Length: 390
Image (tube, rainbow, N blue to C red):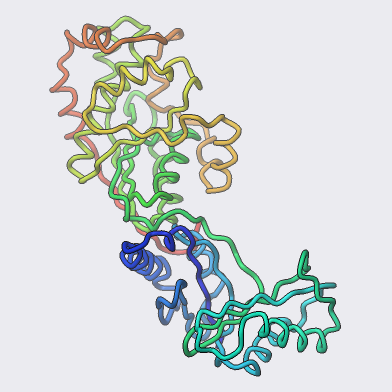
C-alpha cells in the first residue's frame, strides 16, 4: 500500500518529554495536510506515517510535510507485510524503471521479534535486486539506496528521502512577536524563531498616510509565505506616522532612529502581552547599519521589559539573503516600497548612545499617549494555511 513515512530527528532526543513533542508534531501534520486527501496521520515507533487517500495529490501532501517544522525527512514508501518475500516485492516495485550502476540495501529492524537480523535482511533483499537488475552492490558510495524499516506488524520499503526543515514543531516553545519590516532580514528572523518551535505573531509599523500602502502590502504577502510554515499567523498593522512626527519635531536628528526603535519596542511589548507572547524578535544584525551597534541595541532594549531576541545578529547579508531565497520571502522583500524606516530618518544617526541620552531626549514627548494611540490603532489580520504552498 503506498504511503508516506516521516522521520524526525531532534525530537528523538527529548527523553521523557518526547511524547508531548511528538503529539504536537502530529497535530501540526494533521492541520498542515487538511484538505489534501489525507486519510490518517499516525505515530509509529520513532516515526510517523501519513496515509493519502486514493487519488490524493501526493506531491502537494509531501510539500506540506516538508514545510512542517520538526521533520527530518519524508519518503514515498510502500507498506507491506513484514516478510522477506513481501519486502522484496515492495522494493522491486519501487525500483521499476530506475537506472543506476550501483546500489545498496539499508535495513532497520525496530521490531526485535522479527526473526531475521538487519544485515541478513540486507543480504537477502540485495541478492534479489541484483538478480533482477544486474546492478553492482556498493556499500560505500552507492548510486541508489533501497531502504527497509521493520516495525511490529508492518514493513516499509522506500528509495528516496526528501529533506524536511528540522527544528522543533510549531507551538512547543511558546509565543513571540516579531517586528516585521518590508526588508530581507526580519522575515528570516521570524522564520528562524518558528523553526525553533515558537508561534510567531508579526507586527508591521507603517507610516500611512504619509506614504503609500506598499509596505503594508509587502507585509501581508510575506505573512502569507510565513503562514505556509506555521499554519496560522497573526499580523498587526501598526500606525507609526504620528510617533515619527513628534520625534522629528522634538529630538535632535542623530538620536531619532534610536528613539523610533524604542517606541516600536514599547508598542510591540503592549501588543505582545495582549497576545500572550513572552519575547520580542527583530531582524537586526550587529554592525549592519549605523544604528545597529551594541551601544544602540542596549539603549533600545532598555525601553522594554520583554526579552529582545535577534536570531540574525551574527550573520552577514549574503547568508541572510540566501536563506530568504530558500524560504521564499526574498522576491517579495526586494520589491520597492516606502516603509516607516525611510521617513524622517537622519543622514548620520548616533552610533554610541546610552539609555540616559534617550531618556533625556524623550522627556518632552507624550510617551504614554503616543504608545496608546499606536496600540489602539493597530489592525489585526489573521492568516490560515490554504491552497498550494507559495
